[in-house]
Length: 160
Image (tube, rainbow, N blue to C red):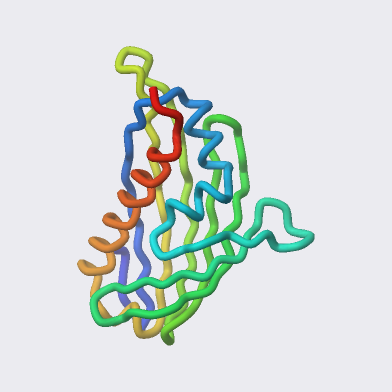
């Protein structure tokens, strides 16, 4: 967590996940909005935003500690370098809170272990009620949801 000032929490989060699949297969599932929607905790579908390529509207039901409810937002993919890297931007609000963040997702293939390694770096700003629940809870919840997301994506990859 970078800092907490005047009801705004600013965090930097990082993580990685190993897929037992080829890099192109992982990239393809990451570019599939239906697969992303199935994997995102609390999201039922991503609805394309007309006139905005690689941009979707999402509604989610999420809960962190005592802050539970519905959130609405926009998900956008940019800076794509297939099949190696892209940036995911999320902007949303709900439950008297605002969430804005960008995540850089990078893929590399480990030929020795036949795994694709996904590394991610996120900068997230949270304000309102959600920011008041504390750095440790938000960070722990973000890491748990990231793991659920990547596990959900892996379930959609072809069986090896």
